[in-house]
Amino acid sequence: DKAEADARKALRDEQAELGELLRRADVVTVVAETVALLRSALENLPSQVAAELAATDDEGRVRVTLTEAIESRLGDLARRAGAIGRAA
Image 1 (cartoon, rainbow, N blue to C red):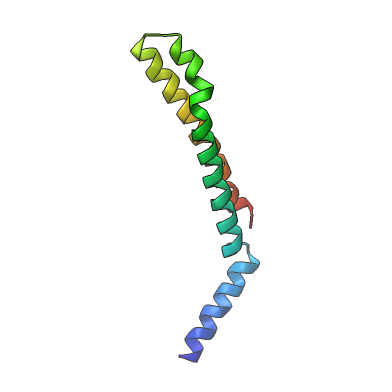
Image 2: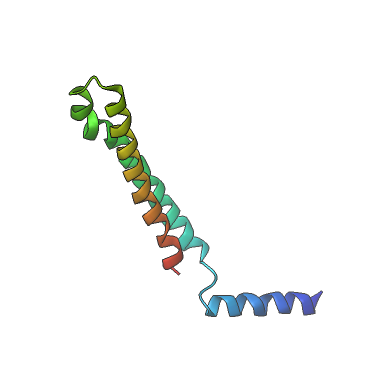
């Protein structure tokens, strides 16, 4: 009913004033930028680790190198995704 709708609107207005709500456009922008960052990082990964991987025949070292490189990219992504909360 109207009273319930008015109450929901008042709550949204209050949350917006307090910075508790994010604008959809801001979230869409940050998510799109984050996906582009991840894509770029993954596309560049082979050229960034190829020489090190080619220089070893140690499977454990290959695993560590790949794990570290991937975790680094995921860390970058997590920091970028954290910008969603700060963008408001």
